Amino acid sequence: MFEGHDWYNPPAEWSVEGGVLRFTTLAETDFWNNTHYGFRHGNGHVFARPVAGDFSAEAVFSAEYVALYDQAGVMLRVDDDNWLKTGIEFTDGLAHFSVVVTRADQSDWSVIPLPAEAMAEMQVRLTRHGDALRVQYRFGDRSWAMARLAFLDMPESVAVGPAACSPIGAGLTVQFQRFAIGPAISRDLHD
Image (cartoon, rainbow, N blue to C red; front, top):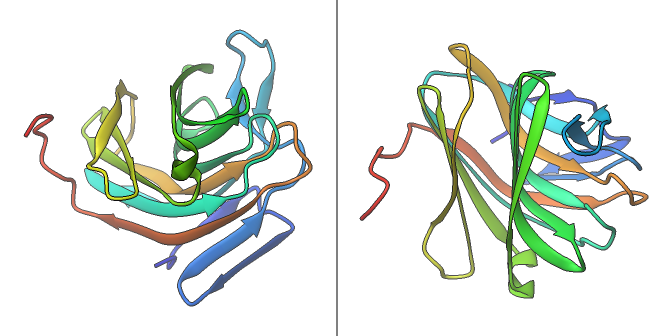
């Protein structure tokens, strides 16, 4: 499940046992470029592998989110100035489904409030179709919901993998029960 993956900013503690990736983020780690806050952070953790062409990546993960901006999910990296991260982010005392798209060194941020049950086990799907990225999520027995359809100028090959950060907190322990990359799902946006 994690063959060919390598760390971009490795955490101090991590393991893969029985196909499950576990790691604890270092304190004050994040990915964010400039917009609104005026700072740039690129020290979050990503366990990624190169992927060429169109694909769908799916992750199932959980964590004990407690500090403001604790986050876990999936990241796609082109380079330091162009990337997408998505998953659960803890803000305003609640879990939110979060998507950050960074283009030309400027990040944006969108959030969708989630019920507490989503923190027990979240599923994320990131699909690439050319320069379009489709972000979906689900939890429990719910159907896939689309959170974002975004543009990112990408070369043929990009790096994709599980990611987590703790911008304010002392560290977040995350568990990825599943991570898989396969052929892209259909381009149809509606059933």
